[in-house]
Length: 371
Image 1 (cartoon, rainbow, N blue to C red):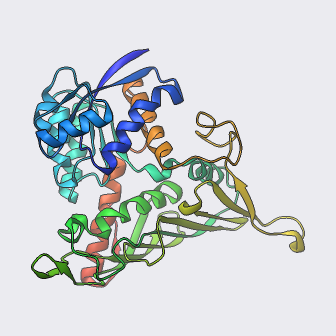
Image 2 (cartoon, helix red, strand yellow):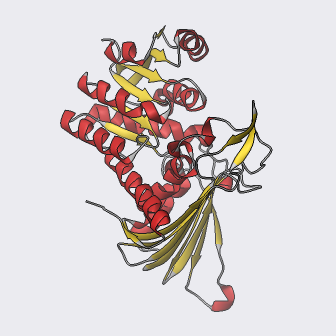
């Protein structure tokens, strides 16, 4: 086993999740590389020191530039606001360090394209954090589709719906400012990544994007919300299958509505992240009177389940998804081989989002650039 010094930029919600994952990953997966929590940077020296003490890092950095330049930092994990993703990643690659970046890849399509170019020019391992696609259940669904378990896929419906801004009385916050922080920049990337992983490229789409609550309470009266609350798109996949995607941060009652339904000529599949250890599978065989959806509980026979638990149906959780990501990142560094999803997969998502905004603006179907 070999130690690798990790520098983490960002100590909030996702920063803590990555710190916990990096602490646990060696024990869970017996990885060849063992993370050493070397340095953490945050919005300032005081917050970095607070996170250092809480998470167990050896040192706190004055800012992310100090972290990236430090010789004891061998790889960088970015869990900072997306407006900083590009600058941090480009600096890390220039310093010869692999990068794991939380989604979305950047604050714009230009950012995403530049980050892919930087990664590929450097020839260094790079990954993007689409954690929900890592559940044993969704990995199992990918296997089912690859094996043709439900025949030719004809239709896909996916959603990522939450309700943290459903109430118009909730005060405005940072999520209400800037296109990159709207629903299409925040929630949509996860389900678009899921659709691409399960169904392949989207060839064209027609989208609607809107703000439900244009003002919210602010410190000095009404504050303007200048980004989107929800969006939907009809899509045509390159395979020929039809699809529909919906994203919302104002879907009352939905807490983690990362859900999809897939129809094929020989069966169907349903999944909902709010019940993340269950897959519903329908096979169109046998007598009609005996057909129905079968509830499959994930267990040791499903991908990446056994390292966490030996008992079927006991289940994995949110943090486990991040530990699986950490395992994959370490594997990419150790082997020098790309592990899905790379920055280029993040760019594919960014291109779909950019196309959706163009479609919503022009109110017509738009082709997606998949080159």
